Each structure stands twice: as structure tokens, then as C-alpha cells.
Image (spheres, one colour):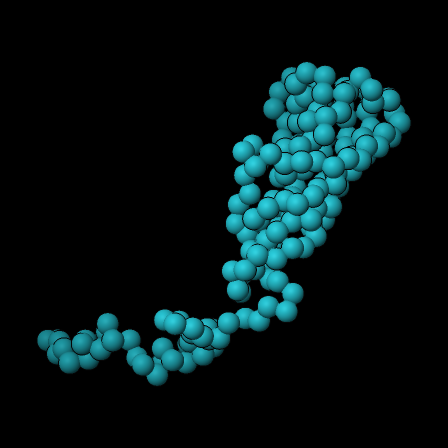
Length: 166
């Protein structure tokens, strides 16, 4: 989604909505995000002198990997972010994004927003937390602490028999 700066009216809000197709070569999906099926981006943009204020909102249908089952599942992710641009920057400002040329390309901003909106541990609907399997079991922190107390710390058990000269 590219917006020509010259077409943004001064001091008046301008709104654009369109579907963004993410090229997997330029925007490779990363776990737990497996695939972007559809992404609708909506930009509300306003220009004041050399500054441009934009609100980017996305609604994306994606395929995620379930953190419990490792199976893919489809879900919808929404996100919104405010972006501040400047046509001419004299020095570095962390809050402003420099505009190079006469257009703003929102594709990268939309993909970054989508990536940031993906849950850290996505869970598929009706997925149940595994309790055990081949070579592992899932226990709570409290149960793990109790087991360690009962077993003792074998690394230091050999020190019990040492005698020290005073």
C-alpha cells in the first residue's frame, strides 16, 4: 500500500483501505506465524506542514502453529499503531520516521505490526495442554520444586561426609 504524499490534503484526514499481499520472499513468515492468508490494512492519515500522522490498522487472516500441538490453525489477528512521519529531518528523532521520496510504503509497517500482534504462544481452539508423552512430562513449578526437595541435590551430597580441621 503506497500513498503519495502530494495527494494527502493538508489539515484534513484522509483514509485508505486495501488488501496487502505479502511476498514471502520479501516478508518471510516466521514461527509461530506460518502463513498470511489475507491482510486488510486501513490507514487514516493527516498532514500538517512537513509532518504526517498516520494510524495503521490491520485485520489479517493467518495460519499459526499451536504451541500445544504444533499443528497449524487459522485465526484472525487485529492490530493498530500510530506512525509519525516527517518529510525533512535535521537530526535523529526516535518518534519520527523520515520520508524518502514522495510516497510512503505501508507494507513493511503492516507486516511489522502483524508480526508484533502474533501471540507468543498461540493456542488452537480446543487444544489441550499436553500432560506427558514419550520422553517428557509436564508438571507445575510447585510440583517440580517439591520433587527437587525430596530428591535432594546429589551434587552436594558428597560434601556431607567431609571432615574439616578447625
